[in-house]
Image 1 (spheres, one colour):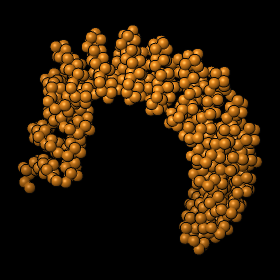
Image 2 (cartoon, rainbow, N blue to C red):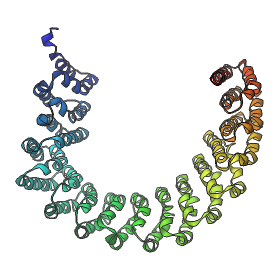
Image 3 (cartoon, helix red, strand yellow):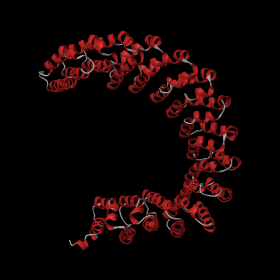
Image 4 (cartoon, rainbow, N blue to C red):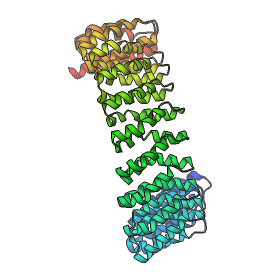
Length: 588
């Protein structure tokens, strides 16, 4: 190919590949747009590549999505912000396609490009494009236009601003529910760019229209607008305009709208402030906690602690606690689970007395729930209660339940308890732990489920770290080592794992005198899996013990294992010997 034709080559490849039947080739060429643009140079990109892309809109959705994404970061390739307007036509075309994800990506890219454009270019190119989309015959164009107003509005001259507000108002009353939904979704963003005097005069009527829409999908999106607008209005205006809407939404005939209110409640409370929350939103929240739809109760129950933080403890005890008691015996396990995940956080809010009298019985009933998730959620947050009521009361009331859960038939519950034991141990102290929980920790090492045995071995190590090597030597090591004679090889393997975890915590002396002999003895086991695990454990012990012990005890054992009939045993024994040799060379 002649030198003069060379710059044409990339665009020729792109055109060829974009027309190829293979979607992967088309996708690849779109993803290489930036490379092709660099090869073409800024001027040819503006004059050839961008017009070509504008025409090429009838294609697979995946290709169009990639194109919409690429164009959002294309400003440097067309010559910088002064030429950014050339990117608007292809993106405008993509805003009209039927596939939602392509339109959303095109709107996102337009926002990115518009945010960098110069003010005069916004007025000359961006706003006319926005008006074309908003007046589009096909509803997809009008849907896309709603997401662009917040970019265009700040740069518009006064007359155009008035026009843009009027256009948005028309979109809020569009015949198509999809357009009204998009207007409701983007109202908060648009309102944030509007001057305070126009907020009440222009935006609030639009908001009121959306809150009374006959489609519940539009109303539930307006709920999010409540929080966004509430933050923009003065407190007294917020109480006058937003609060009645929230109260009305909390009684909406559609459960989806009520669910949205329950889900957004904390943000809505923040918007209206503490006083209106206490007087008007408490009754609304109580209604949601007692809603006849389980999904609404789940959302409301999950916010109970956050909501109580806004109230004083008296109001919480008087109004919210009765509902919490009802929810703890709710017919839906998901409601109980949502409650269990947050109820512990109420203890610091209510204070010691109310926690002991009112909350503790609820905790206990949830700890005995028939569904594991409910029990798990309570266990994982026990420390929050401990800080309020103290360890004595906690241990008296909750320990029997914990012991019961330690033997739960669902292994995930047992696993959660094991992971919680070191924290419990540090809170209860050595004496209490020895009496009540020590035996459980040993029992888990012989569990039928591998994950439990694995967690139990780690638990033994964490307890040794918590209470120190002397305590571990007295209370843990003898019981662990006794289990090495268990008839089942899987349990013997767990003990080897526990030894390898304990050794670094116990130190060289205890490892040599107590742990190493047991490991070396296990090398005579008849099961190959045990023997190659012995080789692994010995390898992990080499850095811990003295070199003389390695030469005298560990190496002879590994040499013997390296001649074992089993290929895996030989492999791991040889690997351990090589590791030993490397350490010897490094230390000499």
